[in-house]
Image (cartoon, rainbow, N blue to C red; front, side):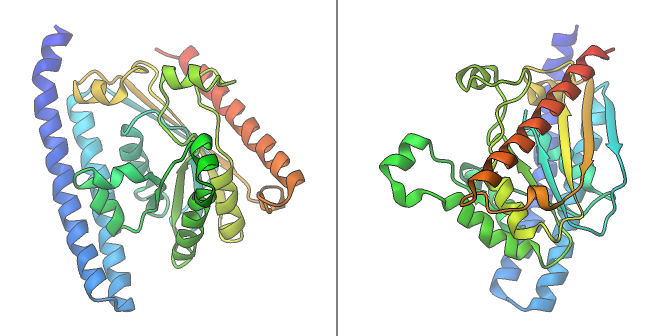
Length: 298
C-alpha cells in the first residue's frame, strides 16, 4: 500500500516542488539581473531585501508541501536564544539536498537570511545555480589533495573565495552557512574516508576557520546545527518526495565566539591544532546527538 501511495505522490509532489522552485528562482534571478545592470547602492539594498524575502518564501512553501504529502513530525530544538538582527556562522552536517530547504525555512523569522557555501557544480543546476548567484552565495571548487599537488597554483583558492564573500557579508546581518564536511554523507564516503564518527564524515576546518578569522568580531554566535532523518536515513529526499518522510530533526546548539576560535589557521601551527581539536570535539558531540535521536525514535 505504501509503495502504491508513493507511485502517486512522487510525480505530484515533485511537480509542485519544481514549480515552487522555478517561480521564486525566476523572481530572484530577474531582480539579480536588475542589480547587475543598475549597480546603484540604494537600489541594491532594496533588491537584496526583496530577493531574501523570495528565498525565504520558497523555503516556507516547500515545507508546506512537505507537510501536505508526508505524515511528518518536525522536531526543532534550539538550546539558547537567537534573534533576527545579528550575524551567525552556522556549521551543519550534510545528508541531503533537503537540508538546504530546511535551513532556509528554519531561518525565516528566527535569524537573518542565510548564505550557503555551495559546490561549484551547482551553478549549472537549473534555477538553483543562477538563483544562488543572484543572492551572492559563494561557489567553492573542491580539489583533491593529489590534484592540488600536481597543480600547486590552485592551493588556497577556496580560502580566497571565502575572503571575497566575507567582505560582502559584513554589509548587513547575515547567516553564513557552511556544510563543514564538504559533501553529502553516504555510507560509501563514510567507509572510504575512514570516518572516526558513527553518523558523520570528518569535518574540514580550513574554510570555517578562515570565516571566523575574517568575520569573528561580527558574529553574534556560532550555530552548531545537527540535521537527521531517523526513519529515512538512506535516501531522505526520495522519501520526502514519495510521502514517506516520518520525522525531521534539527538540533541547534548555540556556541560563543571567543578568542579560542579566532586565529591564523594557516600560519599558526599551535592554533591550527587547537582549532581542529575544537571542531572534532563538536563533531563528537554531534555524533552523540544523532545517537540519542535514534534511541528516542518512536
